[in-house]
Image 1 (tube, rainbow, N blue to C red):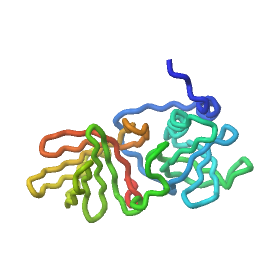
Image 2 (image 1 turned 180 degrees about the horizontal axis):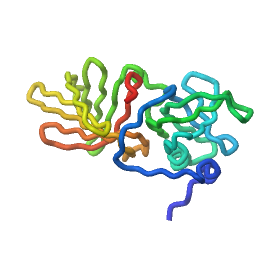
Image 3 (image 1 turned 45 degrees about the vertical axis):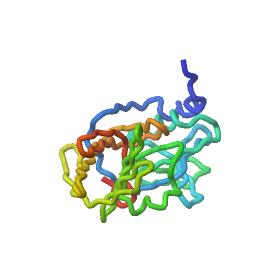
Length: 223
């Protein structure tokens, strides 16, 4: 049996009364301010330091986003940090030692490794999706999408977007004999290589071949 991570016990008082469920669900309506930054634990509390800032905000998961539980499963040492992309409402903190409280309304992703605050393309991206075995990634902005695979040149394509019920949508493109479809649904998704947790599932279909992965909204799109 795998040993329980020590940080899980440090966070237990925070979410002992929380419940959550995973699976297909309607996309939540984002409210408040969207923030990306570094998550850490101090005194049994979860803190967020926004990218390129020195301020620290106490996390209050008032929207039951699941960030506390996800963080407990990813943090494996006392001094470990995570990257998180969230939205919420700022409020004055009821405890000393921080710069305010962030009342969460939505969790976009939380991860232990990979691009975080250092991602130069995040602000321009509308969506990023990726998968493994074999590796693939699709980056989307207002001008088009780019499909990348190992040992292949990046393929830039125009696309059309179709909105579907329950917060789902798909992007389609057809050029140079290739038909590509990217289907996105609001659902908890765990990257099989890094363990990163996001809340969009992705399915890439190219010329009849189906590959699955995870996705998240970039800085230029919230929903």
